[in-house]
Image (cartoon, helix red, strand yellow):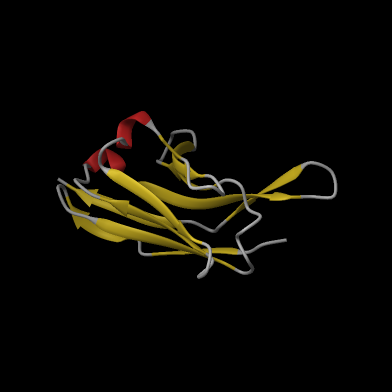
Length: 119
C-alpha cells in the first residue's frame, strides 16, 4: 500500500502560478506511473499529467505548455508546476500512483487539494 498526501492548492488569480506537491508514504521507485488528475464540479475526473518511472511525461491537451510534472525518487514526491492558470483550471486536484500488486497493479489516490483560479 501507499498513502499519498497533496499540498500546495489554494486561490490564485488568472495568469498566476501554483505548485502542487504529492508526498508518498514509501519509496516511489516502483510506482509507475505517478500523476495528477482533476475534477471540476459536475465534470468527470480527467488526467492532468503523469510521469513514468523513467521520467517520460504525458499531459492533457488543455494543460500542455502551461503545466510541468516532475518526480523526485529520493524525496518520494511528485510535483505539478502550474503556470498561466485559467479559471477553467479550477478543480480538486488528485495525486495518483499505480503500484505493483499481488496480481497486476493497483491505483492509489490522494485526498485531493482544491485549486481555485479567479478571473
